[in-house]
Length: 156
Ligand SMILES: O=c1ccn([C@H]2C[C@H](O)[C@@H](COP(=O)(O)OP(=O)(O)OP(=O)(O)O)O2)c(=O)[nH]1
Ligand SMILES: [Mg+2]
Image 1 (cartoon, rainbow, N blue to C red):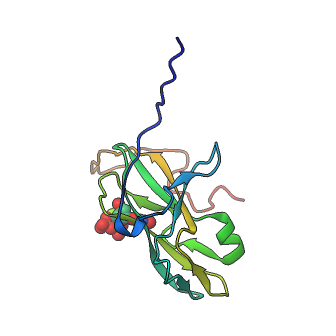
Image 2: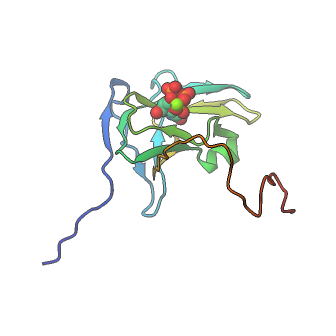
């Protein structure tokens, strides 16, 4: 018998009151890296983001990111290209121990007001594995060819 076992990490979601009726965050194509996040703004009160302004937009869900992973909140290129809408803290970091509502910090870098209505796909979240390092203070760094050269030291 052929047993198909889904080995993908499990992402548990808790729907909050403001997420009532919203589609679950979802991968919009088979190979999509990120799941689209929807705006959990009030149906009767869309959010207007004026040029140059920012807003923390709720998603309506608590994400239980599995241990050893993070959620990266990234802009959608279509909104960035067409409307100048991006994530100010891109990529946003959702820690695996965070138990608050995931929110998206959007900024309008465009020239027109942008209206965010309920259910609009405003950003995407990529689940990525994380390595935590141990930290040790030392007095001398090991020698390398590069040394302290950086910020364009190798030329263009
Ligand atoms: O785009 C984002 C970024 C962060 N968060 C939540 C989840 C994350 O685990 C928490 C803290 O984020 P971060 O560490 O980036 O912010 P901070 O300014 O360092 O806050 P804190 O002191 O709470 O860590 O805020 C979001 O919901 N969306
Ligand atoms: Mg932090």
